[in-house]
Length: 138
Image 1 (tube, rainbow, N blue to C red):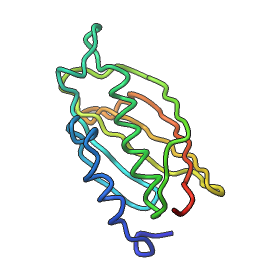
Image 2 (cartoon, rainbow, N blue to C red):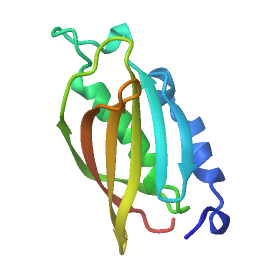
Image 3 (cartoon, rainbow, N blue to C red):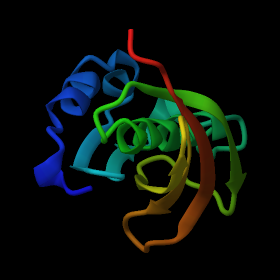
Image 4 (tube, helix red, strand yellow):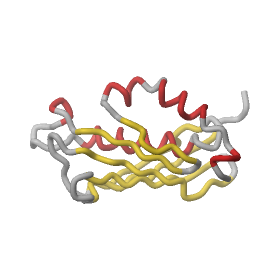
């Protein structure tokens, strides 16, 4: 399925209505069928007591990219589950990039991988795997 075969307006509207991602300063830089890239700068309220980015914010960044990718085919899709592996730390001021790719969809289920990297040196910060479920037509 190509972008020409799918109208991506619905996923762009979903992003425009995503107050949580907007509140954290996330920017969707790529939205394509089965692929999305989202950027976020680690701000002072995202740093934990160890002076590194709180894992919850890293998960949220990856989850936002996941949402864009798995909804890109035009079917309302939600998370059925996800897990994340933290590889290295991010710090205040780091610009992080989450790149999501749908690996497979089967029936109403799917698997999407997201790699979170630091923009400056492309170091892998985290690996996220999301499991999605499309909702029946309402």
